[in-house]
Image (cartoon, rainbow, N blue to C red; front, side):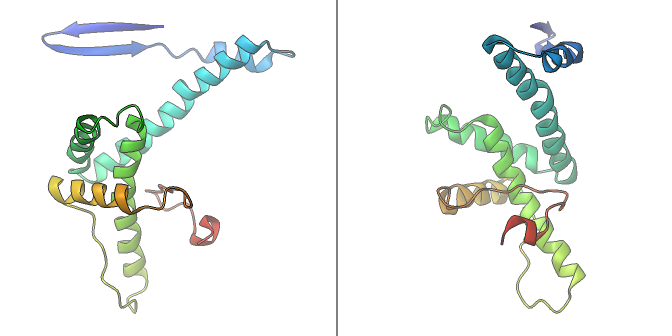
Length: 162
């Protein structure tokens, strides 16, 4: 399923994406339970994983401190033995939310100069970003409200139901 390569102290994992296999599984008229499970696994790894990577890469490109905040947040989660409860992707999405929310508010302020509130800017340092991560983790109502991450501002407030 994959190939691990090590060179001069660095290691990579190469995963071959097989679009033909996914197309074949989709075309099955009466798929077995194993075929359905394989199809879901391939969609998770190759389609959703690629979309997640693209989103996180866009945030890291736009905000230089985001990648260090993600690494520090991963270490914090692991040191508090929460790695089994909070997936790595969720930590990356929470950090992306910190930067996306601040960017949305900045854009809203620039579009409407009459707004009288203080605009929350994206964190420019790792410590500020990490503190915002902890604030989001402790202050968000996880039971009643989904965490919507929209760095490109494609979702309107009406669509969010706010």
